[in-house]
Every structure is written in structure tokens, then in C-alpha cells.
Image (cartoon, rainbow, N blue to C red):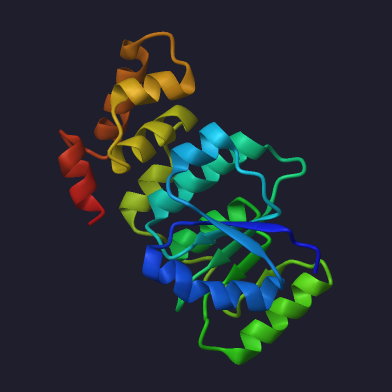
Length: 207
């Protein structure tokens, strides 16, 4: 099927080996590599034909993955994105995958029909979406997620860094802000928008 290498991100070690047969069935004969962290995507930019990501992770982790992925690979000649989950994903995650134009979205590994349709789509070079992907496209998301989408671009990065347990200093360095005060202003802007006083309180809203 032409795919030489697959990078896999977002699965625990047991999930990783459990998912490999599914990935092999859809993509054919592959060489695979587990990517342990987002920093490795940004710093090393692993060479691969397909990036397989766990689309059942929290919405902020999935959004952060796509931000790092697109920053590293750009829009042109990027690896194909294969979003995979055992059974179902949240509406928030569906919106993220569609917004970032993931080529393959498959979230029901119990369905033999899904496997067959997905494999045929890949063979034909076409995108694939699991059944039900668009069934709730007009769903109204809860206030906390709706607030996220109203943040500025830099505030979104600050939010994602807070949720990932990163610091203001890391935010400043990674995004080239002139000073720590600039990073801090975006950081505190997020807390204000969510009407919380601390990162701990913010993270508690999403637990």
C-alpha cells in the first residue's frame, strides 16, 4: 500500500501493542515507532508517512497534538493523519479532528464493516470517516469548551500548556515571546476568561 513508516502517539504501551494489528490491517505492511511526547514531534520531526493518534484522549491533549504536528510539518507534504479509538469519541474531539482535516477517523474497532470500508478507502487514496462522525455536528458544547474556542490564538496555546502541566517560561520559550511578562499576560487572560484563580482550579473544571 506504499506506507513505509507509521508514527504512533497518545497510546499507553499496552494500548500501543493492542492497536498495532488494527493499524496493520488498514495500512498494510508497516514499520512503526512509538512517539512518547509532543516535544519529540516538535524537536525531532520524525520522518513518517502516517501519524496515528489516539483520538479518545482529552480534547485539550488532542488539540495540543494537532498544534505541535502542524507547526512541525506544515500544510504541505505532511504525513497522513490516522485518528484511532477503540469505541467512540467525544463531540469536542470530533470537531477538532474535522477542523484540522484528519484524513482517517476511525473510532469503532468492534465493527468489521468499519475495518473493511476504512482499508478500501486507504487503498483508493480517499479519506475515511467512521459512521456517526457528522451525526451531531450541530451539537451545542458545554460552556467550558465553548469558552476555549473564544480564546485568542496565544491564549489557546497558554490554555493547552496549562492543561499539559507546562510553565509560563516554557510558553515564552516555545512561542518566542519577547518577555516572560508577555507569556504571563496570555496565561492570566485564560484564567480570567474561565473565571478561575489558579491553574489547579482550571484543570479541575475538566476532570
